[in-house]
Image: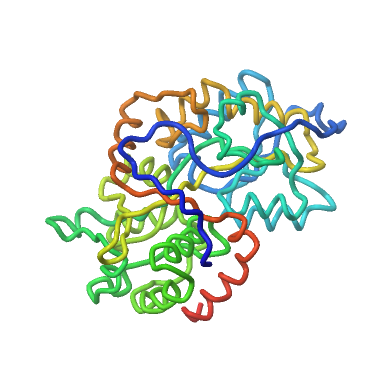
Length: 357
């Protein structure tokens, strides 16, 4: 992948929006099944708490209390959720899909999404929603890595990609599977950006394989291993790992730089779309409206440890302050999502060849 937009900025402080491209329009006919008091959500992991204390936990509870509509929740890797919805196209089960990019774009390309403009989406930045109205970000987020602060304290914390290839990390590094997990795919995207192209990125990941434990379908499952010291470093994302760090005190969030280069990250939002032929179409629209309500968006940082998608939400809670500090000074680049969506399979195949996965 050689094409990236050149728009780059560095965090001085973060609040509010960021991510992809467009505007929204409403459409879609309600099915008779919409009368049922339920809605089925297929989502990437990271927003539901390990102990029932995550953003989803609160949102689902509040939404059901307000509307009487029960949320049926199905969780997996971003790619896994899209693949499942594709298999079910002749008998659609999901009403809403929430994934990380580029999988939300792939869901659209595979005909899984219908356009809908949720209430509140007018406050979502134009770069954070699809041009044709097929999806909009509901929680903004940034890609990152984690390390074990206890084992790597006293100035031993990793700073560069190259640090992870040191022999001290033998069998102590793991990242989730590109093409299956959104954060795993993000490893490829960041490596190709930081190393200046596909070939040098694949050369690096081939070298890293000496220390890599192996594939993982779920990024969320890596954090407990890092916290316990089974791993020294793994990939993740700021929202999920910050939320996990409340119960996993050894987690440290960091952003690898190429040796001699700058620390970088990119926006990796949870983007939601209304499923075509959704069995509970009307309920799904109400659910999307609720995700972008001021109350739910205010809770993104307070409860979820993430960044609100609505730019009119000015979070000042303790989590919001801590999150701004984590990403301060980190350079944010904007991937070419159209290129990634179009060529993702090729990149994944190249990664498999390079790493023998």
